[in-house]
Length: 457
Ligand code: CTP
Image (cartoon, rainbow, N blue to C red; front, side, top):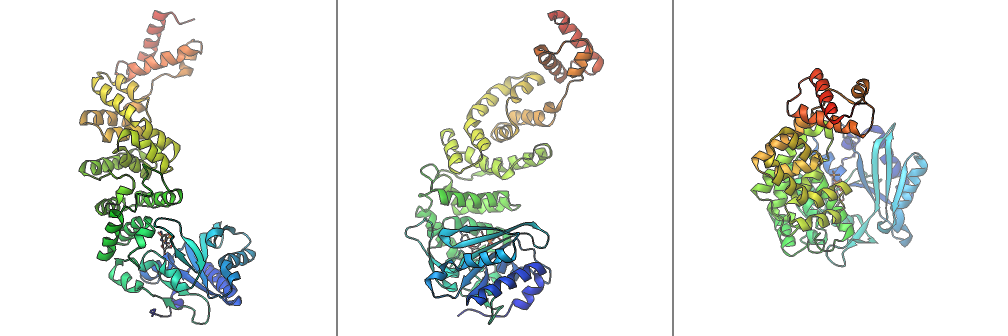
């Protein structure tokens, strides 16, 4: 039996008034049709977790419609969403027919801000085989909650009367919120949906909770039993699952808590989903933190996608001929796939040639062929000398400019053309190597070299 308590009065004061009004409108519409409406998932969890009286900014609200008996009501969630769109004409509505869910999206609305409301029809999901997409059939709220990932996410608050404001807790979610545990509802949860392993880690680290020991056993069991083999990216990826897995991976790698999360993923063996050979050993752990530090330092001029480059460092730890395929299967952006494809070539060129350079200009000419993210990844994988030189290049030498530009050359009487680039390049080399210290010396330098090559008109 669910633990029932009346939460609506306290919730009401914690929600932004226009959102509260919207929820009430939705509840009235459902009620008129003889349905129940529930607030479920993360919003309930976060409302119960956040202490005190403060108003919660909810941007993502999940609702479930339930309590119908006719087959025609299978699309209740969609119908309710349509009705709400009539009342809120500025909202964008998108329907995912197969799963009978509808999303209402407000973008920077004057009243509601940016808000997304998912409305689902209570359903049972059954899985015809592990790691497949859920199929859908109409069912009750309990079954809808039972198909969810963790007890703390399987709480619901009824919004419709009678008994509005009741908290439905069929699986001990409130107790787990109290004892700070991430617990699945049944042993097969991770077999049915391997992305939940990533979610368990994400919630555990984000909320500062522990993964309950049985749940951890289920995770290890699922991984050992090859749950990732179906989507193992070096083989044939299953597109829908890969997309969701990538979303979870992104979420973790871009979060402020990515370090403990990645450690936990690795301890659980969950990095095997990227590749069976991927192990976060001390060296790789060092590399990924190193790259993150450099990204932070160099960020102001570059605006890198930090999570993506962290992921590239993980993929770079694999064999060169496997990297590009994995990046492509993960549907990484084009430039990222290219970086991983070219990494071996760039790394060989930098590592072989950088130590031979005697002058700053030689280092400059070698490294300027490559983009900054590639150089950062190569630096992480190189020896001290190379690392130091790449750092000097990125922070100092790549910023050095000549004292003269094309306009100055024109003013000196040179005719614009291909020789301009040559002159400016020679100027830059001499400037980099400290042979020229100011404008006058630059003018003198240009006069000398052009006299020699008789380029002056
Ligand atoms: N869910 C699930 N299994 C998944 C993904 C989602 O059971 N693989 C369920 C959970 O009950 C979750 C709800 O769908 O609460 C909504 O998913 P999502 O928006 O991803 O999670 P939130 O709990 O809202 O988390 P967040 O606060 O990070 O948005």
